[in-house]
Length: 375
Image (cartoon, rainbow, N blue to C red; front, side):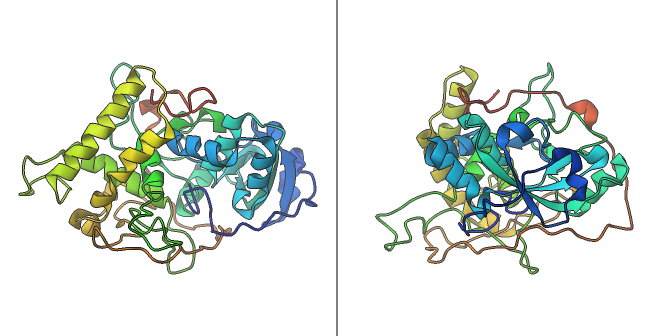
């Protein structure tokens, strides 16, 4: 996701003021930047467009089990400031969600559609042409402009490395139109869950996740590193494709220890086999696989890894955020709180990119009955 690119832009859990005005979806252009309004989810679920192609259904399932078991719990979660839904108003006055895709995916999956949500307007770019809007979204780091091409025959290969597409307007098939059509990225699930790894027996009291894979990262300006969990997801995906060495003399493998690599590959391949057979995958199974990624997160390759420049802004050419050196180095501090997204000045220089629209087609998304399967 855009700001936190996880589920929370900050660690704050302040309750949203329930006195905000009811959203008038026909006049969102009349809201000032930064202002908020309230509306039942079922009234906006067919209006609010996503700005990324996929979520991690395993991570969504975990959120459902943790925060959305009952309607009151779901409402409480959406009333937290971390549950606010920031949007940018695009051409034809269409609102585009720029963060919290996993949060609303969990709400959608829970089926508690009468829960009130808080929309927060970040920018009004409704006056821009579709092409200019797409480029501004990319320049402002409000859109994850990468996704997976489909395999021959039409199915999506979950292990293919993501490639860039242009934007949400010139590549309309690249990003689903509705939240409930977001595709499943298993690597994004693992990137989220490796930060939930718990070692209570090895960590000091109050720091049971001290051996998690990496930490949340803020930029020098105080804002969240754009799409930080998608960056790690790409790295894990790339590492998987490089395989495991037969011994500890590294050649192409990203892993420091071949045994650690083989353990993860066996666990991941088991999950994918279950998915292909149509079997539901439990959160604990996702978590066990994610736990096996900690040595990769803490290894030598992660320290120097750079995302391919071909991915384009904002991820291309960037290092991994929040890297922790040392397999057994404890993290004895909380993840930092980063500032919420704000509307930047419009860019003056635009650049063109080839549209990848022809590479995409719809694929299955997370549903209440199938929130952890891979198509």
